Length: 83
Image 1: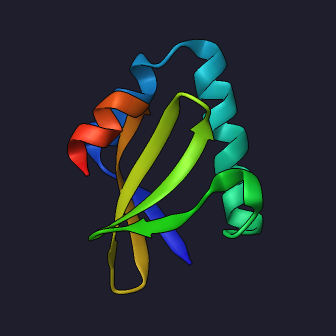
Image 2: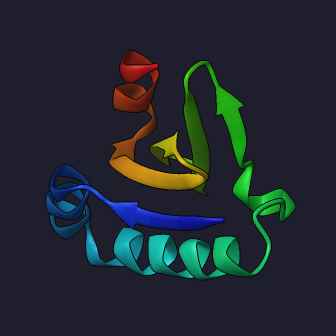
């Protein structure tokens, strides 16, 4: 599965703490290798796809023509409000 990021996602990513950005990059590389790796918790949540960065952070994307467009990355409480 291919993916891309929205402008909002890239802005949110840049605003994350350095350690969270490092974890997000690590998790994304893992996602590229194996979408279904247990640590990612990659799953469909309503109309979105969700992936776990760490205990407190998640990423959300939408599928368009077999491609995930990531539009949100941030704290779990904001993630909950979006879904």
